[in-house]
Image (cartoon, rainbow, N blue to C red; front, top):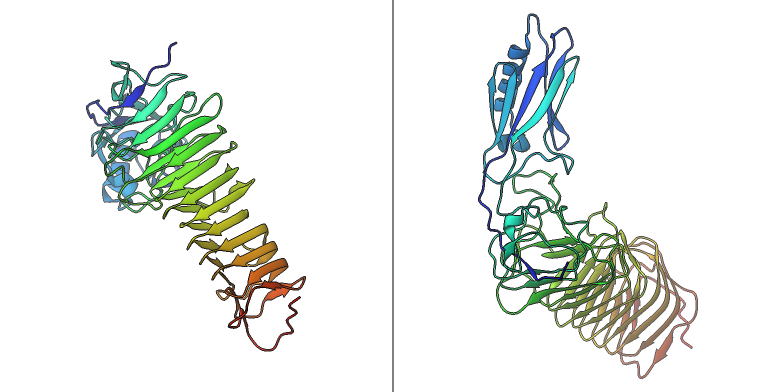
Length: 419
């Protein structure tokens, strides 16, 4: 099939999802009827003389009295032994056979059967062909298509995993796309989101991904999961900010590179998330936040930007940059900070090779975890702040240039060798 530019248009109407639960069998002692959403359950247990009809009525009363937000997104009704769940907001799903965590039914001793009588229909459904324009026709992207988000206010929210097997030629997101792409980790009603939160797509080879093209306000949130695909990510701009920060997040276990210019990007920021990064550059006011599950194979370069990370990497930072390291007992092969750059360590570990130049600072004053520095070079304009005296210097520090004020700050008396 010929590759065709495929645009997100969000053209579908909205129809409320409807699911029924039918309870059958002969109720007896200890029988239950259970509704579960997002690992939270409401259970009705048999009482004397109960029938399936009265058990459903009892379960309905519990559902209506519940304050659990996941259940309050649904209108509950009952007729005889059938319970009906209808989405209060048309186009917002609460059940799908293709993702876990949605509404499910169970029973001890009886049969509680789920049936979807009306599927969720939404302009925000990534699996709905009516929401994509492929070469002038409504169709979802196919292998080899460039996938483009442009000139659309409609968010991409549901069935975000639907295109996980599609091998795109590229992904482009323009600033005129103001509808968000993906869901925040924390739902606005206060629960951890149980629906998929990352828009998923792959590629047969390296996938070029460019975000923030052109002018405009951009989406308040965008989250991408590229699976095992290797991604060349360029982020030029993001949205104005929303319910989750950073406003751009991505996952990929491939051999990935990233270029971040003037905006904030996060990678695998939740403890349960994993990802990999071959190299990255952060420039002109940009920022990059790396979670504990990120494996960095190469160097992260920062110029007039900021880097925060819970993982280890080789770091080269310059031009008024800030680097914040949160990892516990990690080994950093090399950290270089020049031209008014500050490196702050909230954890300990080892720096095998460190370099400070031109008014730069290594700040180890934030906690008392032990840090070992094997080889270290600095000039007389720089500082190492060791307020708790927890740095162990394996070798003498090399200080170059004139020393006009104390370059080392520590607690109490220490023997310092400068060679």
